[in-house]
Structures are given as structure tokens and as C-alpha cells.
Length: 307
Image (cartoon, rainbow, N blue to C red; front, side, top):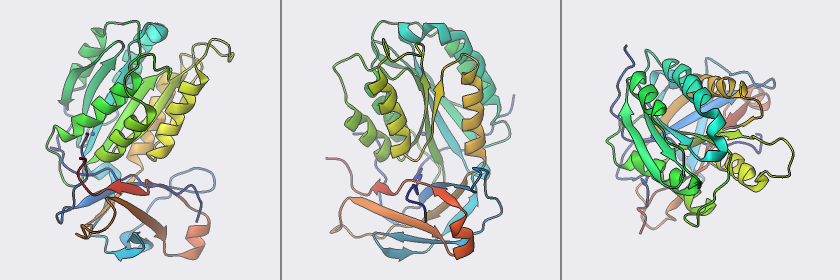
């Protein structure tokens, strides 16, 4: 099995609403269903379809677990927090962000999906709480005001916290879509705290990295790499935006990735004496299928509450 296997433990608590016109949260045990989002792709990167529950074997800390829930991801609730950089450095993308986000939101029509909008610059603020109405997000995007600083890591932590402030369906998937140039210019937060917040929330991060300056000179390449690593560490994906037209295409890829996921769940064992950080391994049972399929998922989750 590929060493790139990761697990999207995107669980817990979302009111499913359908488009008509997810310290921060901790994945608790107590016999609650833990939902995992999974992407399976072939050698060409195309989604592997028509897999069933019998195709998989799952273990937690090397102990076999029974898969209690399995479905196509498009049939399971989805909660997305759209996190938009509103600092002056990305101001030229403002109109494109609005147009691309509008298309992205409408791509979930007919699904059980909700989206919240958070904007950050000097400070972090929720512009729209979770809603199934894309028009509310579009209106909020028109009224995002730009600031000078970039509180990037605070924004990730705040967005992750939103998942714990809501009640979610047991099989809901949680996603952060982060649009930024990656430059954290405040003295608050850190990469470690932002990553832990996302992991505790059970959220997958998709990073859309804006690169307004192509040459390394004048760019915060470290910030860009941090955004990419944040996506990798949460079993998400990162996209580099070097041209304005790339933004809409990147969001389209995120939408496709979410629509072609599988969702499966199990009931974690109640073993308080074990480490609060649990390790999950998922593999295909058919050796031939396993050899030509890559699974992307998060391999850890937090089982104990944060102190």
C-alpha cells in the first residue's frame, strides 16, 4: 500500500440541509459513530468507483474494527467553512474570489451541504454562519473589507472551532477551504496550533495558495509551504494559484474531490487507558486492487478532550 495513505476522519454532528434556490472540537468516543472520508484513485489519479464495504479492512491501533457505515460521499452531509484571506496582499483577487466561490457553492445543489464564510486580515470574523443558501455567502463576500495584517493561523483555529459550536449529524464530513497567500504576519497562533485545531475538529483542509509574485523574491515561500503541509497533514489537497483564472479551476477540483469521496464509519472502542491520539489504518482486501489504488485519508484522530 502506498506510503501516502492518509485518512479523512471528518466526523460528527451536522444538521443536514439541502441546497434548494465543518481548544477546538474533539472527536469523542462514548460509542459514537466516527465517520471517515476517503478518496480512492487509480494510477492516473482518476476516482475508483463502485467500491463496497467488503473491499476494506480497518484497524485502530492495530486492532480490527467493524465498519458500521459505508456510503458514497455525495450522499452524506457536508459542512464547509470557506476561509478567505482579506489582507491587502490578496486584494486583487477579491472579485475573482466572489465569482469562483459562487460557482463552488452552487456545485453542491441537491446535496446535504452547508457553508460558512470566515474572512481574516488583522482580525478574524465570521461573515456568514452555516447556511444552505449560496446567496447569503455571495452577499457576504461583497462586503468583505480588507486589512493590512494576515492572521492566518488564528483563522484556521477559529474556523475549526466553528465545528464544535454546531450540532452535526453523526455521518457529516467537515472541510476547510482556505484561500490565502500563506503569509502569517501577526504574532498570534502558530502552525502547530492551527494543525492541532483542524485535527481535533476532524476537518480536512484544502489550501488554495495565491502566488501574486512568481519569483521567490518578495514572496513568503515558507508560508506557502505551510499551507501545502497543512493540507497534506489533514488528508486534503493544495492548489497553487499563479494566474487569476486558476482560482475557479482549483475550486472546481475541490468540488470534484468532495463529490467522489466515500464515507465510512465505525464505533471506536472505549479504552481510556490508551493514548488520546489514535491511529487508524485502512486498506483494500483485494491485493490486485490494492496494488493499483491509492487511498487518501487521515491516519490519526484525537479520542480525548483537550485539557
